[in-house]
Image (cartoon, rainbow, N blue to C red):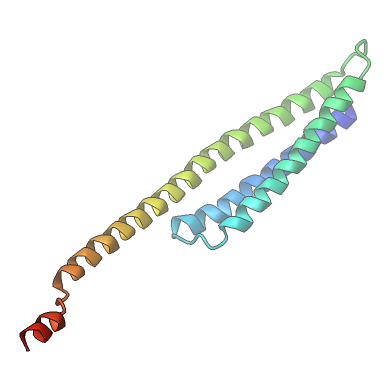
Length: 141
């Protein structure tokens, strides 16, 4: 049981890292700074890979437990506490991800508007270009 509790605490540690990473980047995204976006996603993927591994280890430890083993009250308390912490981190991370997506969507919409403005301005400038009258002048001469 100690192994499972230890793994649950390790999982919470990595969820905390994930949360902290999101917090730092949310500040940048809110300021319109997306230079670190690729590194941000790569780091998140690495943490998610570690979390998958920890989950597999929890499953393995659970499957190796003796089904007739009686769990101590203290162990139950620690497991419930670890699961409660995990649930809290997951809820916060979901909220952060919604904010990240909103920042990215806002930036995307801004870029689309800029592109539309450029296209509109090119059309307007194209209308003011003077046409070449050289062929007409040659014919008239």
